[in-house]
Length: 190
Ligand SMILES: Nc1nc2c(ncn2[C@@H]2O[C@H](COP(=O)(O)OP(=O)(O)OP(=O)(O)O)[C@@H](O)[C@H]2O)c(=O)[nH]1
Ligand SMILES: [Mg+2]
View 1 (cartoon, rainbow, N blue to C red):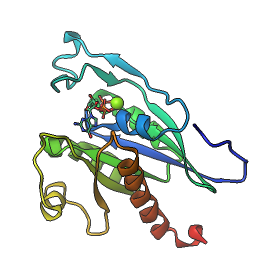
View 2 (view 1 turned 90 degrees about the vertical axis):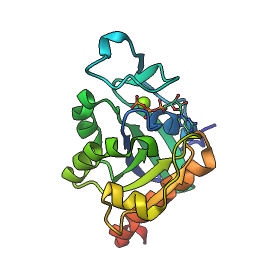
View 3 (view 1 turned 60 degrees about the horizontal axis):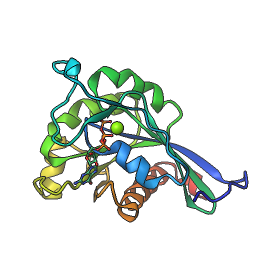
View 4 (view 1 turned 30 degrees about the horizontal axis):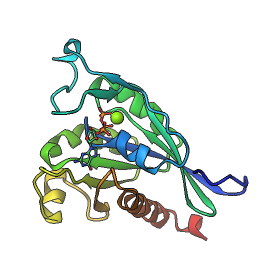
């Protein structure tokens, strides 16, 4: 259950981004302490050729946004905005990014190259980010060095592994992002 807000907490808006099926909606649903908003629609054959529809077992895709709220500590409330992963909704990602402190970019090692356009977009928005590899059961495991090389990450960009279905592990990924954001604005942490 969501802890009641006192009104004097610090708040931060965070973007949860990533390619199709990376686990964005799952992560927001796992972490939110309020009933999360999701805008998923069933994928049909009408989307073939336009959308990614090719993930076994995945029947729905986000068409607007996810929203959730999490009190990370007594005095810090995070508002989580999950972006859609389908390319035709990228303008929505840009709109959702306004006012965000930073982004957690989820990826699946079976689709690492699908992360490129997302990173291009986020870097174009000058939004600081951390990468969270969502560890799917049958996905290949790579060393951090390999992951950094494939995604061409800056040495300072945090890279973590998480399971978007697991609260502890997803919280840890957000903490890594928050520490990174605070390191970029040290005065904000005082
Ligand atoms: N095995 C495993 N499955 C996961 C994990 N995270 C999500 N899933 C499943 O993978 C599928 C994709 O998750 P979503 O959360 O819908 O992905 P998304 O990034 O929101 O997808 P789009 O909005 O369509 O871009 C769902 O069926 C989840 O149940 C994970 O960590 N491990
Ligand atoms: Mg989604």
